[in-house]
Amino acid sequence: MEFNSPLGWFDWGVIVLYFACLAGTGTLINRRKQASTDDYFRGGGRIPAWAAAVSLVATSMSAASFIGVPEQGYRGDLTYLSTNIGMLLAAIVIATLFIPAFFRERVQTIYQFLGNRMGHGAGRAASVAFLLGRVLASGARIYIGAMPASLILFGDLAPVHLLVAIGVLTIVGVLYTLVGGVASVIWSDVIQMVVLLGACVAAIVVIALRIDVGPAEVYAALASGMPDGTSKLTVFELSSDPTLAFSLPAAVLGFTVMGIGSYGTDQDLAQRLLTCRDAKSSARSIIGGILLGVPSVLLFLIVGLLLFVFYQRPDLIGDAGTTAPDDSRQVFLAFIVDEMPPGLAGLMMAGLFAAGLSSLNSAINAMSSTFVNDFYRRWRPDASEQQLVAVGRTGVVFWGVILAVFASVCIWLDAAQREQDSQSTLLTFALTVMTYAYAGLIGVFFTALLTRRGNPGSVIAALVVGFIAVALMQPIGWGMWFDLSEPTEGIAGGFRSVLDAAFVWKLTAASALSFGVCCLGRRDASIGAGS
Image (cartoon, rainbow, N blue to C red; front, side, top):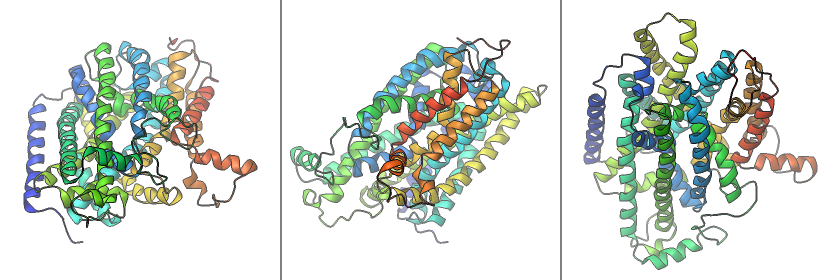
């Protein structure tokens, strides 16, 4: 295997300097000894609301957004921005319903809350569902985060090179997380978010300077830039077509459900909410994080729109010989490597690599926290805090390896998804993978918060039903056995329409089914009575 980096020595120097500064900052942050699991997994409840908010944005966006959102803007329009409506509605629901309940019971993981309400078996079952779902979701993000690493090391995205990049990303991420727990993860997220947004603004400036015409001509090019001649500047798609993932109905309803799953039932993101001083600070952090995410997403979409002008409208730029990459996943990466000034290209690639680390750091810390608090504590109730922290660090290594394995599998899954759906992007791939575990968890949490129903048996059934329901609605599996291009009428046509529905509608349907199944169980009167 031969290294064939497209970056020069100056860019490599910037990358080394960036990570040296990141490591130095992490060392300063982690001077405080992690003496307890509360320190290691909750930061001792000392994280400011604004830092938790920035970390929420950094983790939820990550490299998937840095690469995937510009690809969405390049191939599509601005409708992804409208999904923030649902995310804000979800934040309000979580701030008023979920967070007060979590803080009243002073839990270190949100699944301990389920255990308190519906029995320890219910909490452990939800923890298993989270661990499985987080392997899927974070594995997909690590795969995407490995793309810039593969590009800067080898100059391409060949599968074997992606495998090496995943390995490098995993080793660095595990070592960084071992040092200081969730506090180091959050504060490094803050640094990385500043770098990523700065890199995004720099990219916009560089691309804009390459365009020879004024804003009016650029606007006209974008206003008719879609393949069917419609506008790439559309923000609200009013269609009720269920195949559209970013239509207004999907943004309002489907992404509200998606947001509740992401921020209210997923320990990876919810863990940041638990690091705040109290419920009010936590509520401010999630609402602030969602609001901060709106301009952040818009910046990345603007990059995608300008890249469309740069590559697809050479008549509007000075260099008419610029050729677009064949693979739309590489469109932003190719611009950084080929068009960015030396030094700035290195900084942007370092920021992208750091974004991949952010996805890994956050996930393995949350997964280790869940294992220690929801399983190991019950197996070894006499274990000291120092022993629990040691087990937590071992868990960081273990889950890092597991995530790396699934990230490697995603190389094949993404290719298969694109073969089944030519409109699939990295963004929709990453979001779809997340829904498998969310469906069951959403149903279970709403049962715990809104009813006096549910027991360990019905929780397990709801989690299994939610996962299977989402899986059965995916065309990628059925396409291996049947020719899905044929059926258009009758029962076969109805089945095909279900498979073609956008992932948020599948999640909404599966979550409702899971809620109904969970409510079938009668709660033991001796366990928490609910709200």
